[in-house]
Image 1 (spheres, rainbow, N blue to C red):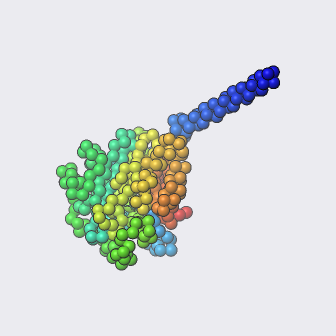
Image 2: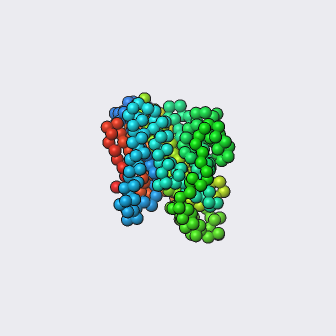
Image 3: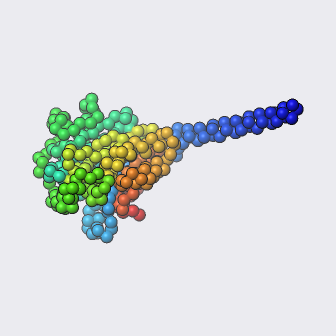
Length: 359
Ligand code: ASP
């Protein structure tokens, strides 16, 4: 009996120690969880802007120095528009929209003027924008005559009770809003037309019924989407994305770009993200929101969150592409798992970075 009591006391005291240790570990865990989310971190930049012009098989050996210079100068022209807006105290939403307008007006990118062709030889454009302060968002899909779809996305966000409009309805709303419309012919570019012809030659009828994942030729038929994320001096984040989608798309296909949470996401508590890549996978991985969620719920940094999604989650599913992101402290990320991604960034010191290939 005496032995039994001694054993019982010993057991209870070990057990209570373990409980205390466990509790300590738990509270430590909780502290670090909250620390990384709620405690002010070092401000990296008072305002910041990042853009992309699509990710894909962009290899130095396939590029002439003139072509590279043309891309670099257009990326710089675009980002400087947004940078000047932010520097003068303008909003991140204005910076995102006006920067994307420059890229949409250039035939270099698969958005606006340079949009790729569908299987029916039309151009069907998608875009979205999100305000990190209010979590308000706007998106348009499959428009054929809106010159700058990002303008329409913003009008949908601000002047309609809806988040996403598509096709003819979206165009009717654009006309009501006084948004600039163009003829179908505006989007014709020889180079994109030839890409469609090449893509059609590559595919056999039988292949059309295969799932995208089984069709390697799809990989290079879609890149060139544009996107922009920004943090303004008031601490507001915004993100926007605009695209022509995928060359040779059919059946009214819509990619990730106009889908809030996949192609675009912004939340003042975490970050702003714009995606580019194989849309089907970005939709299924909910890429943009997933990065924000990893920061919000798991306390990951923006770099860690972007890496987790772009280097693990998306390739594990079989997809490829990249993202640009900026967090509420002005930390900027350009993460991609392809050979290259057209990209640029500027911080509040005016430091410009432009990249094309994997460095
Ligand atoms: N994500 C776009 C889409 O699938 C394409 C791209 O980013 O280039 O529509």
